[in-house]
Image 1 (tube, rainbow, N blue to C red):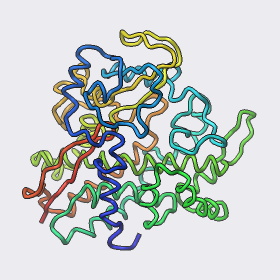
Image 2 (tube, helix red, strand yellow; image 1 turned 60 degrees about the horizontal axis):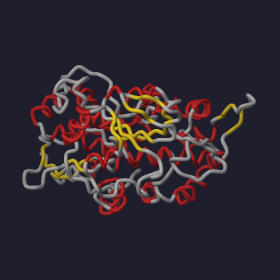
Image 3 (spheres, one colour; image 1 turned 45 degrees about the vertical axis):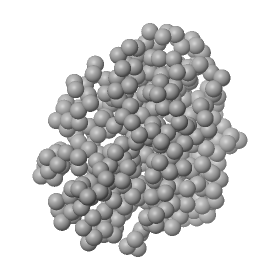
Image 4 (cartoon, rainbow, N blue to C red; image 1 turned 180 degrees about the horizontal axis):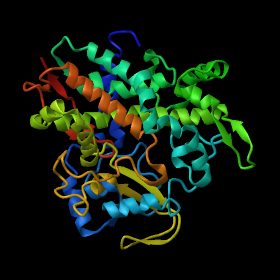
Length: 415
């Protein structure tokens, strides 16, 4: 990455606006604060019949292709204990009711490790998990994150103002994950735009995979190419192209689609509280607690879904086999049974694990990379942009979205 203007800002704005067509299908048209409704639902019962957005009162589109599995009974959990319990019991509450077949199934993020269970999931996750562990965060920072952050700030540092949601938050993760796959800056947004057309992503990756098989480099695609999986007969074998593409589509989708929103949430929470921002600027040891508190306070993906594999009495509700249980993590993370004054953004509160990154065996693989991107990015902003503050002459950022929550524009001035 050497060009000063890394990305087409207008194109980034189109692809990374929660109100645009790409994101609107996940409830981008929802502009209310759902937490009062979620508090009321949770106070009445841990689990309710129905789907989160319908129970919240939002009638707009909230899934990519309408309600998945409309023929099945649907339930939604709103308490921390219920959501945490479901994550821990991955046999009763499964990611998928059918086996994942990477060689013959449809190429999508859903037909991937995300939906695997049992031994299959353990084998595949073990291949890439070491690259995403905290001890390897430095590998990501040195190879891609630091350079990306520096060049992005270079592009607006002399202007005295910026719109950080587009100019910064949206660009860091898409450039980081694309670069880790050996994808050029020019192709990074092509991948983002093709998230619903995975075969277009494969066409971009095919020559890279072929090149890394011939000559591995220090990047994530080379890790996948060199990875060996032990099959059911105990024989080691390299991943096939289909398996590599499945991993790639999942990691590229997750890597470019969530961290930008969560980084914007952290930044907005700090910018709206100048005294907290000043404290973090003066004592960078407060940045990690601020990030973790923002994760709890407003998770960007406030719902995960699971299939019920057997009849079960759960949190006072009978869930029949084959039904779908939606776990409202946004509500669980503000459960007063676990956190005092849960609606307050408080970086001094005692740290307790939240469910922002899921839980159990399917805890988000990239959570430590996300933390590294957000931490590196905000530290750099505080280092290089003196007197960073919200632009008083622009509209203040707002949190919008149902199943993908994030900030609108984040206009700032500095200097």
